[in-house]
Length: 198
Length: 362
Image (cartoon, rainbow over all chains, first blue to last red; front, side):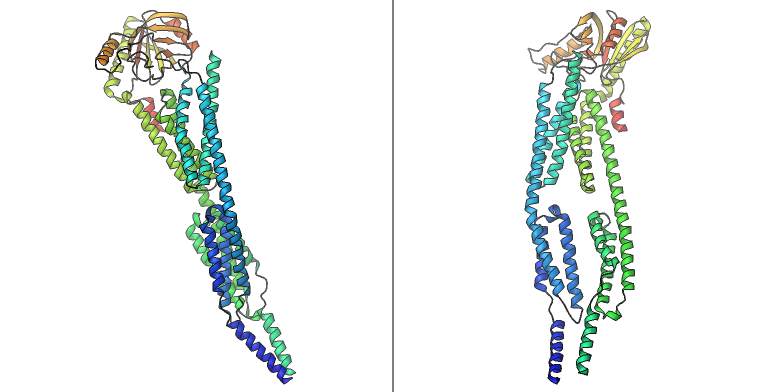
């Protein structure tokens, strides 16, 4: 019985010694930080804004847990390690999604660019059909200048796509498309007005 | 046995005291609040306050951790809860502040968008009236694109980017204004305006002394005023040529002549409703044409042109140099005038003309 007691006491002492001397999971901490930085480097600020914010919060919580445990006499890094492992896994998952999101944004920008170009071409074709010469309404002539003003903006859409600013390119393309559509509508009204007076 | 029991009891108490109770609700709410604040853009719209909030949150969390470090019966979460309640209150205030800053920023950008849009509309009207279809219109179209982008960015709460687009739109508007002013440069020349004013005064004086009808056409204002016995009697809107604001120099320049003319023929049925033919070119026009031709400014094969009329067809039509009016007004004018009625066409009679006034006002 006495021996059993001694063994238990020894086991308790050994267990305490092990837990109190446990080392910080520095390798996992570095890996988790690198994983979050990897998401940032992969344009996570643009294409995974919310996920990146969550990752940063989770990373901070894991680091806080490590700090909290490091202050304890009986250190228990298991939960912190689990949190860090989750951050790494989540960061890898988010990072893996980013190329698809970039591709999606690119496709959306290119689709908007095509729409803008189509609206521009439609307005141009309509203007070419508009009556020319004496009696032409002044607004038809003005629309030609308006349309000419869209050309540099269409070029800027392409520049934005080339610079991989897909959201900016899309916004500009949509604005160009709306303006080109408005020009078409006004030209049609002016044509109708000319026809109506004949 | 006694030692064994004591050891088991000690371990049981130690185990129980190491077990953490569930986090107080304030702690859990603070996590959600922190996320909400980040999403709302607190780090952008109230960065200093957000930093203070984060400091307070970290402090509260440290306090919570310290309490957790204690053995169970020494833990006191009342202080922790107080700290987190204070953090939550600060977070709520910060959320309100962020919303307020965002509203202010949005309102400021909205106001700028509205002001620029008003200028664009005003300048578009002016360019239409002046039949300017070059640089000014192109700049205005670009300004409209920038404003469209600004609208989209505002809806995404990207106020800085929206503000930059509004600034770009403002630059385009400034360029458009400069283009308009350059387009009417001749109309801002005091000596030129004095000449036009002299023609107008002489025409009105003649109408008064001879008790006749006289017409004065002001191209910049697109207005035709009929004088009877030297007093304004009727006023109509008028349209001009593709290059209506220029002074006619030769055939095919699509410009409307400036000078003192007379009606030489009344045409009851013309291609453009009814028409009143005037005696362009007059002696002054011929002299100027000859001078410019000698200078080589006009190709040899080009003539001085003619057949300048006041006709119907609508004041919003573009002509090749004639003056166009709405048909019902043409009817009235046709009946008022007779052969020999004076028709004086000037650029404008005002130095501080409506274009300049409108640009200044907008």
